[in-house]
Image: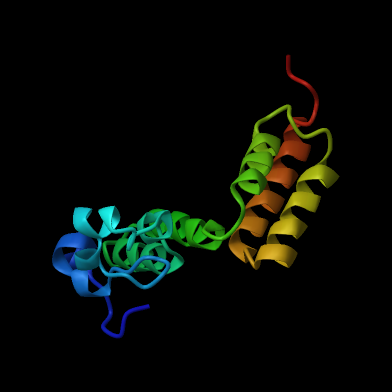
Length: 142
């Protein structure tokens, strides 16, 4: 997180606080240029969103009184380093009628928590498992 508390005045960060926006390899926005790309000094990692950037966005959202949006950014921050295939598999399980049992979703939550440290996302999936159980959404719906 940045040293100075972020506020809504800092939004959008790419315009108002370019100094704190960094890619996964530490490159700042001013280092990501067409010339740098052509010289292979920029990789896809330099263009991907980072956990820090999402947490900064959460801080701004919270300062603007948008707690739900802030929580979404924070959950997203937890997922930055989770492999895409894992995210897509768990996303598919969260679609009503896809998971066969509550245990299947709870296992996905344990994976998120234990392998990736994604505690908020794990709690989200556990909450979904409880709701799906209560509403009978584990049965094939089609």
